[in-house]
Length: 240
Length: 131
Image: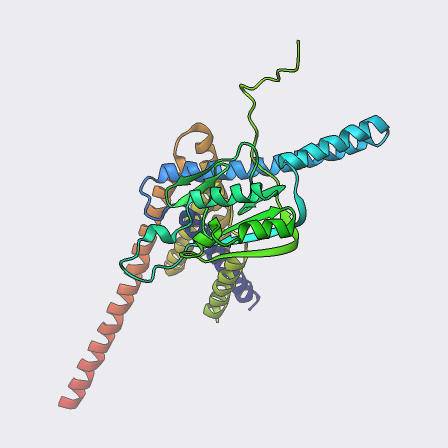
């Protein structure tokens, strides 16, 4: 009788483990293959792509941790010295302006989505948000005095490029797609006024696309996660 | 009764499998090979049950040790740049078909026996009627 009971329990446990493993595996595979194109034949390439993606994610996390550590070390070192304190504040300020820290403040949020085609005779291209549209908006925001701008959490920094990459848009080398949430920190009124003026670029876009401008008192903009390269530039004021 | 336990185990496994976070992609090769090894053990257990020499200890140890060994071999293969897991899959799947064959034959035999019994009883009936 006892033997029978233990037999059943062991059977149940084994079935449990087996089905759990199989479901987990199937879920992993379906999730992973759907992030790449579904009809891909070259599974080796897909494998290595996914491995690299994983490595990249891991390294990015490590980098984040390290920069946090650096920040705390810096603060600790600066605590004892007035001069160092000033330098740290300066460093912080420049990092903020460069786009290397998360910032917040008043500003506006613009949401631009791809429109829907109503008539078969419509030109589909005019119902999509293009890279040029985003560049134009960023330009107008900067012209209106925006101090920090991001598109779908991609911070606009000095090295940012906004380019067309097929059916998506590449910003800072990262892919972003509709809907585009453009956040800008600056004087609310002047930003809103500049962007929503009649005959302005957004008014033009609004003819085909749903574009929405919202004022907000607390805009959160994330930091630039990429790297600045300085392979070729040299400072001209530094004499050796 | 045993069937109920098995079904409950399967359902629980399905549930937990859906709730757990998915594993990293590089580990999925190991899980796949472990699943194949475990499945082989299960079919092996079924076949031995059919042959009436089922041993719980052999079954359970085979289930876990085979899975772990298969994963270790896969790891070794990855280090040596040889696809050892292919050999493991061939062995496991080959054995699976063997065991499935044994199970199939057992049920065919059983079915045959039943129809034979029916026929003989029918003949008996007819003979009694004729009398």
